[in-house]
Length: 216
Image 1 (cartoon, helix red, strand yellow):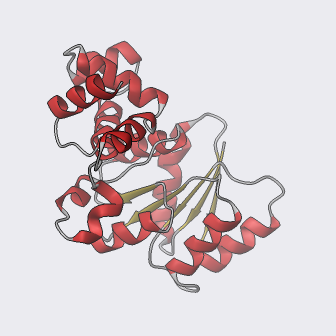
Image 2 (spheres, rainbow, N blue to C red):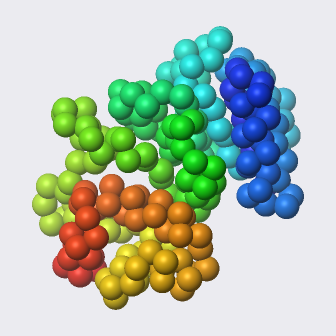
């Protein structure tokens, strides 16, 4: 697996590289100092990365321009933003531009690894801070389905692993029991559940299970 990291803080790049190397024994990490280096790396590489991790504020191009270009030219490559900013506006911006995840740098190493695994499995990671949005700008992240057809579509958007987690939730299993059954870390299960809540537009396990039973 090949991962491209772009962050203008060398020490953080080093620490992040060490963490992401735990994802797979064959992981190759390439680090860039800014958006310009990232773009140059993408243009020079013969083998594209499996994941791009970048900060939201770096020298060079604007974040909007850089991420927009990345997703336009390489829509199949997942992009995760790892930033010191915990502003909901920054989360909304990143996700609206096509980022597959937004991880605050204040997150624990367990959360970061679990979130990255979620994105690599085809899901999207949105931190809990994003669920406090009350303005209309939040609709792109957490708006609940408006009608039955949208509810069905929301259920279909769940990844295979998320559906597995939801099925075990419906059986009344705890996070620990789900983790044991699916051979996952409990922190990974929590990340999946957060993603399920967001996708279904619900706020707790009971609502998620009822939604699944109604629209399965």
